Image (cartoon, rainbow, N blue to C red; front, side):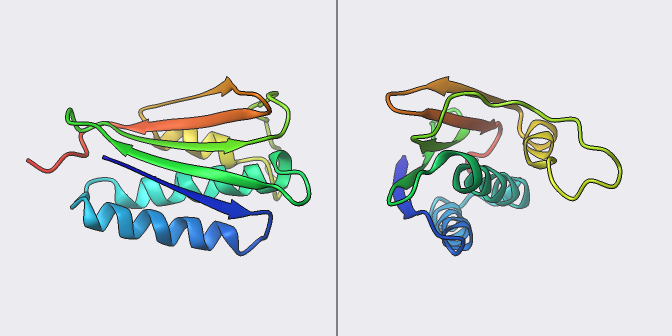
Length: 129
């Protein structure tokens, strides 16, 4: 199963992407790890807006649930492919998004596309028995 949505470069797009994900997971009857998935979608969408979506462009959110129960989240943007996991200090207010994704997802990564990149993460064991 696969669902795809496009979102404009607008701060409200993060909440709309999260709502799209919540509805999709509900339609697919995925309840296991739903909060983790929603948080990771928020973080990846926020990063796309802050670092990867030039003016007048969009980012794409793709959700895929495979038969083996692996849920994959992908956020496609047209920004540079350089993604780093920062080391924020204790008083820093930013820089923890990818650390959260790395901690919550079973696997994550980045791949290039033309133009831009895809930041993805996977959650295992999400299929309905």
